[in-house]
Image (cartoon, rainbow, N blue to C red; front, side):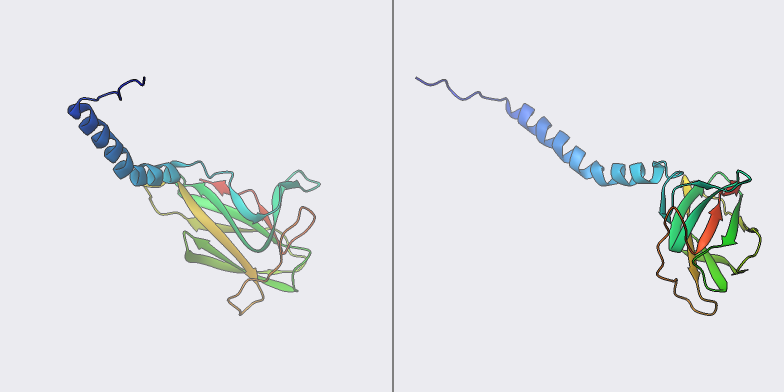
Length: 163
């Protein structure tokens, strides 16, 4: 015949259920912690791959909307910005720090690099700040619907420098 079904001690069943419940209950907290501690320093959206100018300066092309991250250990971030090839005559750039508008700047065609300096608040509970850049026509609040490529974009964003 057949073998009898294995029998488990009732205490073993209870311990297994308690461990499974503890795993399920702590999963959301562990997930939130993993996301908060994730390395986002090289994570970016709406930006081209890194490019180099003739003088060796590194930049990325940006479209109408882009996002990148900087370490929360910094107190100041300097963001080099320059009018891009696919832009209207004057471009309004709005910069948001974790969803709050932090500054805006007008960039004329053919202008030199401008450095946008942002003071960063103390953030002991997060590893990174999210910086969103919106580029559009002056006086409007909507970004232009232009995507960046590795050859061009609305805006050139240089390598952010933190202090």
